[in-house]
Amino acid sequence: MKLIDTHAHPQLDDFSGDREAVIQRSHDADTGMIIVGTTLADSVEAVRLAEARPTDPVYAAVGVHPTD
Image 1 (cartoon, helix red, strand yellow):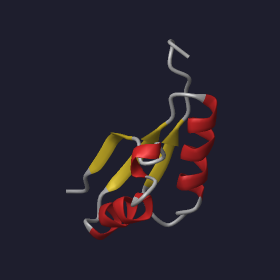
Image 2 (cartoon, helix red, strand yellow):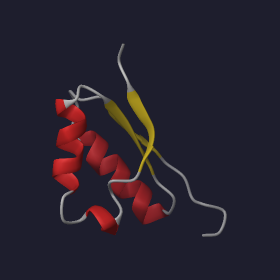
Image 3 (cartoon, rainbow, N blue to C red):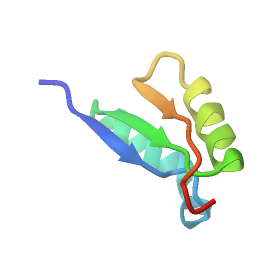
Image 4 (cartoon, rainbow, N blue to C red):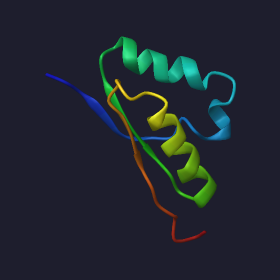
């Protein structure tokens, strides 16, 4: 069975020190990831991260949170 994290935020500043390692661990575990954007800048970064991995199941969900 293939698993996918349907709500991940590795683009946030909290992951600036190990962002690539977090995404690599997902790859190594053979799981997918949907990176969810909540602001315009956040969504742009989610798309950039997803596009940088065309062979991995890493996707972006683009949005703006209602409080923004």
